[in-house]
Length: 217
Image 1 (tube, rainbow, N blue to C red):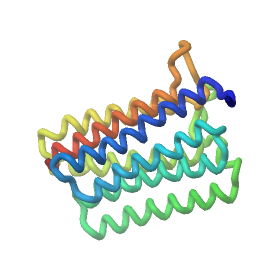
Image 2 (tube, helix red, strand yellow):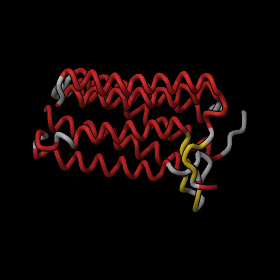
Image 3 (cartoon, rainbow, N blue to C red):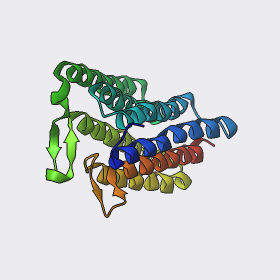
């Protein structure tokens, strides 16, 4: 059997939480009160993004696997933006915002293919602890935009659903804090930051589904 570093094994196995979360969200949506189809696409995106994450961390973090890993993550945040825009914004705003962010994501992916290994260099560094490369910075900015679009329409969100929005935001910020560490960073023997981020993300998507169920169900 091929050997694999403990941190890489933790990252790969924890990524299954995202895959299973996507399947679970789709099952819940099918079995309970229906949600708009744009949110079905988001839950399918959760499932899709988990698969290359397992591939990337389990088979050596190659450039090809990394391309699909960050690409599907960016697809997911874009689908969330499209869903939120469809909930609360005009057709013109939907076209402008989703068109702009989608074009930026495609430009980044083309750039990543062109520069290859250089795309892995941190654009934002936290020293030996970790940092974010360009794709991760783009992912974070798009995630903030998705959350910001919700808060900009807070008055239109039913009062009973707002606490779930706050919970989801808190989980998102916790995950962001964990993601600042490098993939290899492990402290106190058992705190594998990146692997823990995968698990926290899965719970964040569950909170997102609950928030939507409170709004639509």
